[in-house]
Image (cartoon, rainbow, N blue to C red; front, top):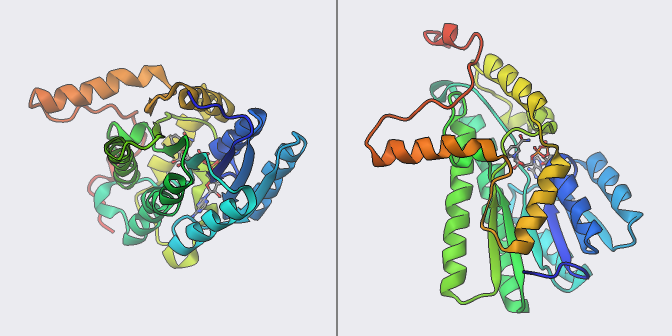
Length: 290
Ligand SMILES: NC(=O)c1ccc[n+]([C@@H]2O[C@H](COP(=O)([O-])OP(=O)(O)OC[C@H]3O[C@@H](n4cnc5c(N)ncnc54)[C@H](O)[C@@H]3O)[C@@H](O)[C@H]2O)c1
């Protein structure tokens, strides 16, 4: 178990939702925190909530889809704190709609942040964490959507399955290297955060969205509203998981039957079980051509 007090953490996507609560939870543990996001106002609010706790807090605008910006984030972390013990590759966005009408912009935007953002975090931070020596830990935020597959979520599921695979391989690689850096992959189900409004920061050049997204977006928003755990609950479970050295951090126990169904589908040579919620209006769109 890693002692967190007096250590330092970096959190991407710290301007809202789960990232903000992860940063606050780290500060409560007595950690110094570097906050990263593309949302300046969100960063200011998270920073203000942490400053009153008497730990060192820094914030930096950083688009995780840009490798040089993540590298600059790592530079800042080592300049300011001299070490990074806990890295949260957490920034993420959501898109919805059938696989065959997902736009190239949906793919580029979502994979650029959800998957390549984590890749950039691993590439910029892990070599320096190895070089600094001692204990460290990397938490990559995936999702239940990285463990099961849901209708209307091809782009998001691909990005999150990628994060699970990357995290599992990173864990293996670090064990082979006999490094004392742990890895966790965080897989929450629905939590009521800003994720349903991800397009608020979508760049104009990647604005073209899935033309059949609307009923799926509405269903996701409804599911997010009905989420029983808060972002603060997720952060608490995550830090407990880090302290306990847990790899898979599944915050919602009730999703386990869906994961088991997928595993059984594979092992018993069955077609995938549909574990998605009904999406009102989506069936009507099946034949729609755009
Ligand atoms: N909310 C859920 O139900 C849920 C479930 C499973 C997984 N997740 C994952 O949790 C993570 C956090 O999402 P959230 O639910 O807190 O949503 P959120 O929208 O509240 O927070 C995401 C944050 O990421 C930031 N961000 C977006 N693009 C960025 C970029 N290019 N670079 C840096 N920061 C960027 C946003 O500005 C925002 O502050 C995401 O990876 C998401 O996929 C969320």
